[in-house]
Length: 165
Image 1 (cartoon, rainbow, N blue to C red):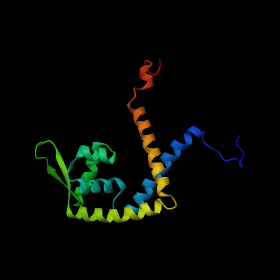
Image 2: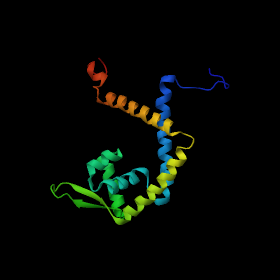
Image 3: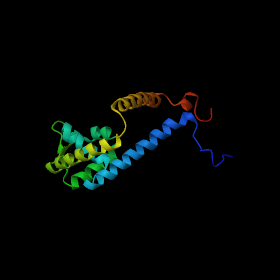
Image 4: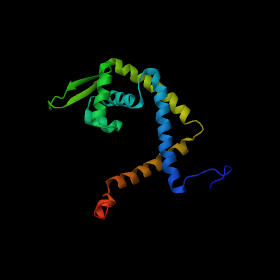
């Protein structure tokens, strides 16, 4: 039994992953909290900024950029379109595809988002040097590569003949 005086700690091999997930959730929640003043969440603001910066995009491209499924991105686009922030325009070469564009109201909201983002970055990066941020980014990129390798490798259970092999 662990005494009250001794803090419980996760095994060392779990701390980085748990801290990373918990930290990412907190950063996203804090960003959403700040974006509430313009009635957007981080995914919606990211979608608007992407279309604003790079032009019309199809639903598949937007889903990949935001990191959510096509059905979810479709619902998000519906909500943004209902608010007059984006439009759906037919693709000139493919009648099955719609391109999502931004309206002048959407562009104005993106400018507010950029202002909020600049303040958020300043606050969240406080007391963390540029060198430390670059080192963290480098480590996260390496971690991302390792995760990509895991996700692209065959499932170990299937290699052994299934879960009961």
